[in-house]
Image 1 (tube, helix red, strand yellow):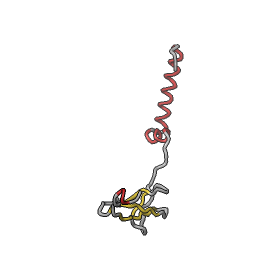
Image 2 (tube, helix red, strand yellow):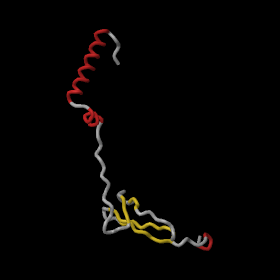
Image 3 (tube, rainbow, N blue to C red):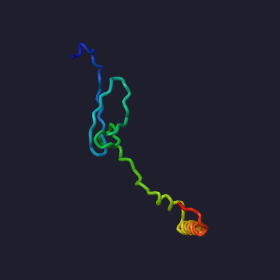
Image 4 (cartoon, rainbow, N blue to C red):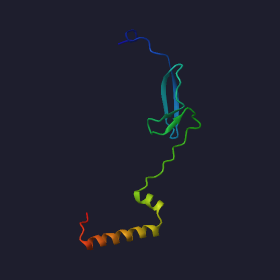
Length: 102
């Protein structure tokens, strides 16, 4: 299939994006179209821009926190011990009364 059967292709410009790992990505856009100032690098996933001397820095990603880490942010050690002792006392009371515990 040639261009005569499909029609003429639109004129294009090629924009090169650079990421912090030194990867270069060339994307084609139609002439006159607004192209994005940033692009995700297809090789490493970091953000890239058109400035080869000053690529955007990698985003700062916070490490995964466990449920316990979030609880420790909200409660002090003495509060945790008080809650635990209340729960254990309630459990012992229910067992002594013969209530089913699941």
